[in-house]
Amino acid sequence: MYRTHNCGELKLRDKGKEVKLSGWVHKSRDLGGMTFIDLRDRYGKTQLVFNMETDSVLCSKARKLGREYVVRVKGIVEERSNKNPKMSTGDIEIIVTGLDILNRSELPPFTLEEETDGGDELRMKYRYLDLRREPVKQNILHRHRFAQEVRKYLDGQGFLEIETPVLIKSTPEGARDFVVPSREHPGDFYALPQSPQTFKQLLMVSGFDKYFQVVKCFRDEDLRADRQPEFTQVDCEMSFVEQDDVLVTFEGLAKHLFTTLKGIDMKESFLRLPYERAMAEYGTDKPDLRFGMKIRELSPIVKGKGFNVFDNADYTGGIVAPGCASFSRKELDKLTDFVRKPQVGAKGLVYVKCNEDGTFKSSVDKFFGQDDLKQWADEMSAGKGDLLLILAGEMAGTLSALSELRLEMGNRLDLRDPEKFSALWVVDFPLLEWDEDAGRYFAMHHPFTSPRDEDLELLEKDPGRVRANAYDLVINGVEIGGGSIRIHDAAIQERMFRALGFSDEEARSQFGFLLDAFKYGAPPHGGVAFGFDRWVSVFAGSETIRDFIAFPKNNAGRDVMINSPSTISEEQLKELGLQIIKHNQS
Ligand code: ASP
Image 1 (cartoon, rainbow, N blue to C red):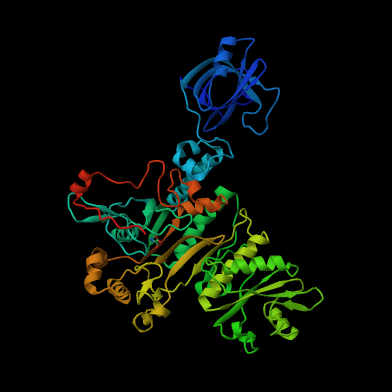
Image 2 (cartoon, rainbow, N blue to C red; image 1 turned 90 degrees about the horizontal axis):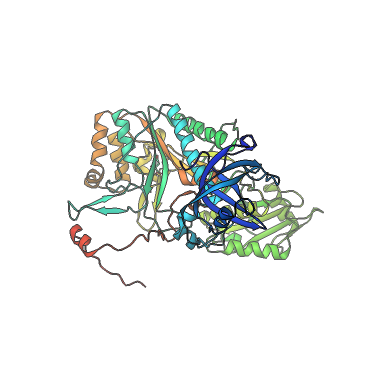
């Protein structure tokens, strides 16, 4: 027998018991005639005591144990004189009477403590050791609890967990597909699902009116920070529902998770913010509503004073940073540098300080008098002591820069507390998005999203104005998930494909199976998918999804532990009928 208890459970009530424990040697200290070892397993740590005086053979053996050796000990539970309230077993220790070495360990390449001296790449190479560290282990436990609560809630609501295939066919969902060559059918390829979208819709046609799946999805996207080529979705679909039914059901899921995992009781209904307002007031479709600082447009009142930047801009707008009129020259210069960063993209920053004495000081005093500046401050509801930060330029770019500036000010003013949560739905997304380079419309969500009934007639006349029955769940400025009511009518689906520039033949060859299925009584349906990794990390107050995935890829999409992706043998290539063409890497 390896253990009667685990390393995290023995308490004072167990005093006097003879126990067996197995685990890893976390740390060892020799103090005079005594040797203390912290024995660790998944559940915690327990202090082992060896005494040179009472058993010198055993104590000498213990002194030779290296870090991360795997051992089994037998001993008696004793009350500790030096209690450690930080450890769950801190009231007791084990007076060891027997010790077996189950396995030796080389010295790990980095320390396996809360804080480690191992760099990112090294920790990824030895991820199985990194997972022994307490904070990383806690992340994995948190993810597990999260998944269980998701299942509990959805099962309780009558949802069925149904698996869908991983080797499928390419579907245009916005990203590039990962493909898998078929050996049996040389020249043919499977694609890995970007999401189970079409399958869950087919399940609705089959009559499984509430479906969910915690499922791996694959997207071959350029790897921006903290993206993973494979990630997990909580994918859901329902039949005989309207948008409101879906939002209510999954708001229920979100609230269940807030209560059970964060201890937060969210009584109020989540705000439903139309896309247009989100863009106008926050410059983004995923606003962080933990703080206000809404964007205000100033275009109509700032033109005509000879300041070219405003006169030539198609949009001018700003935010009010409360209590920041005292910012120094240096702080303002730093903010100017911030908005000029390529990822923010503004050319410059105009500021107005609303001084305590009722006067104004701005970076454009040459062009605008006190009355002008007062008018701006009034328009933006700014008060004494506030600072106006104003950007101008082309509309979409300026709004996006204002959004970044707003978040930056939120950070500086400590308004983005990771333990505070704000959740909302963004609704009424446009159905289509014009792509200048491709010269055609793309589906903003995906091609199966239904247009709003009242906008349907615009689908051919003015496609850009059609709104969709689509929605996103946003928590703390992070898009947690999105979905839509689907098209369930083959004729409307065909019109949608046409609006997207598919010929009827192309639509048939790619989606014939779905169009066919819709001929056999497809129920009205809709659903949503949540980015599971992202949601788990937001709840843990972290910005990195990698920390919550047991075996993640690095920022270059590589698994440095197993060394993947990697080449395959000539023989495998031949079998698959593939030939590698080397591109010159420049
Ligand atoms: N399949 C969609 C996605 O992955 C979500 C949905 O519409 O349900 O974004």
